[in-house]
Length: 328
Image (cartoon, rainbow, N blue to C red; front, side, top):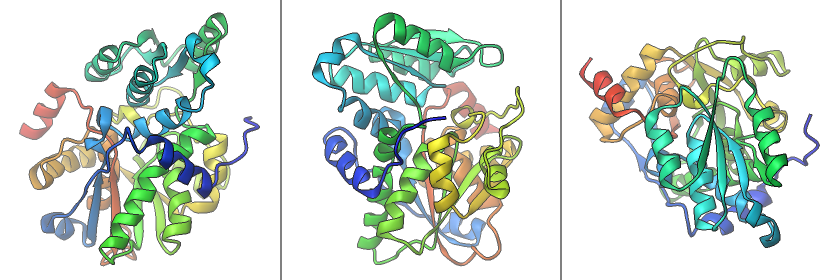
């Protein structure tokens, strides 16, 4: 179990100061057709338009920027299915640090290409038979490098929370505070970072996880009030959010700050990807569209008619897959 101290709202504010020169403020989009489909007033934050194509640059830059200059030559090691990998690779390049990423052998080609484009090394592993954490630890020890976790790290969580700072501020500028917010959850770094920001900036907003219906460790963990893991080999095409279980830090935050979990089928996610492209003209990858899928197809009755924030968290989808989904 991790012994790190839980991040705070002040940590999120400090992260904003570190990352604001690198990340872009992503827009909040609306469309009446999506409101009609969901039965609520949806406000969609398009982090798929973020640097590297997902929110992950926020946490990666916040973590790497705090590595002392004397430690940077040995570089960093990260493990990721793709989006954290790209965030770490970009942050490392901007800070002139070497990076090695441990990626599953079935990672989408577009994410592998993104990592390679920023100059990082890649070590592939089998997600069913090998431990990415063990591989990363061994490589880091051999190189004297620093391991950069993808979610269960206070600096990563605080960095991801800058998306929440933005979203809450954007809604305050509209004089339309959110009643609810839905965000996909893999390890939970983004949703718990957002929750830290909203706890201070929009405390009445209720925050919900969104997950594939057969890979719903967050929903089940929140219901059980303890960490519950997915069975080994559980699959969904939402590759970006297929972590085995919530993290220790993220669940400690989530159990206090989150209202519950929503679920969506792969078919719902495909439909949401189509709707995002048709109505908003944005490209959402499967995991990145999970919250929109939950909002469009599985909104609880007591949430309908309310102002609902939706995080579209990434757009790094294989082009052939995306074309097939759009033309299905």
